[in-house]
Length: 162
Image (tube, rainbow, N blue to C red; front, side, top):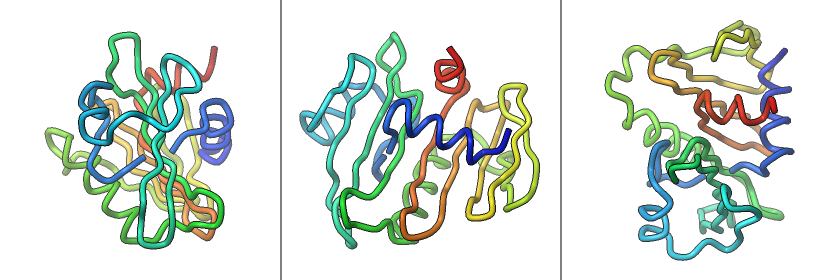
């Protein structure tokens, strides 16, 4: 299984996407305080906001667990927008800052294999991956015109397998 398949499954199943000042584990209440009411809530576990960015609006989508904590966050372009490299890097840096020891995060390059939640993946040709199994952290950046960036926990991965 490649991370491209993982990414496509997550995006298709929950329309994932996320902004620079939020991190995995944030609660729905914290995000509503920070960003206001979501533009849409497709179901009780998913909320989405439109975020203005330098190259157009981005959709920031968050999936919550039963306790209301974020288990997946991501950013993707809305309509004709693009995610600039700096926007993606800000999101990545913010997600990494929530980890206790970011030096334990493995940075996976295109073509390399990695494991998360007991499954083997291969980093796609236009991807970069950050993974820390012990910290329950996986982040995938798909680079390019239609790029996106997402951070997920093993709980999110397990939810997509059901």
